[in-house]
Length: 131
Image (cartoon, rainbow, N blue to C red):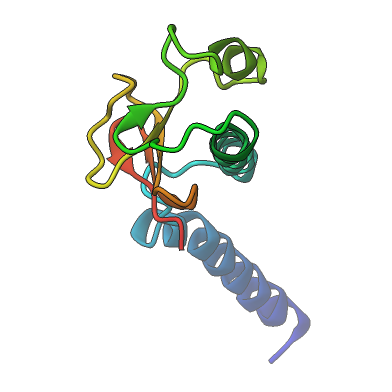
């Protein structure tokens, strides 16, 4: 093979490689439910952690014994001001529920169990895979 043929073959292989990088994500998208980027997932995780912290605070510092089926951050809750002041949490709900009732009436909400463990996270009314 002479130099010219080698260059042509190299260019063809380079084009095929570039096309592979363009077409592959279309065929096999990274699936995290809503195709959220890492920054969005990190923010959601931080909000979920804060929801969990508020639950623990309510349970142990405020001595609220029965948190079952409760929206922790409703407007009449003593935790409300603390919740809405947390960055990006104002449009999120934080609830303790056994069966994901969306008690806070938000399309984005975190569901905790009675032990304040995160059970589910819903973003735009769709469950995120938290495993």
